[in-house]
Amino acid sequence: MRERENAVAMHRTFQMDLSRLRLAVARAYVKALESSLTPMSSSLAEPLKMNAVVQGLGPSFKLTLNIQNTAACRPS
Image (cartoon, rainbow, N blue to C red):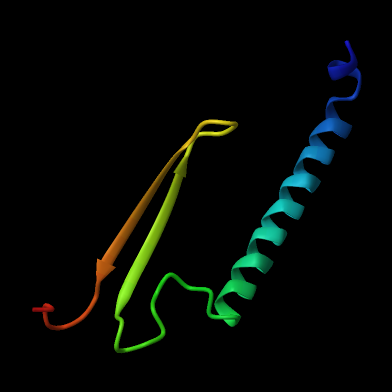
């Protein structure tokens, strides 16, 4: 009953919260780019790229880390 009576207001609130979330994500992304918090190594002596993926929520989840050597030559 409440949903029918307040459908427009609830949708407007949802859209506002969604736009705030998008803005917060965009700001965090720009901050990460500006502070060089990228998954790439900043040193040419250690050319590594790292990617982390979290699967799941709550007390149990799966964390997958991919580490890639981006050097032009292979280490001996």
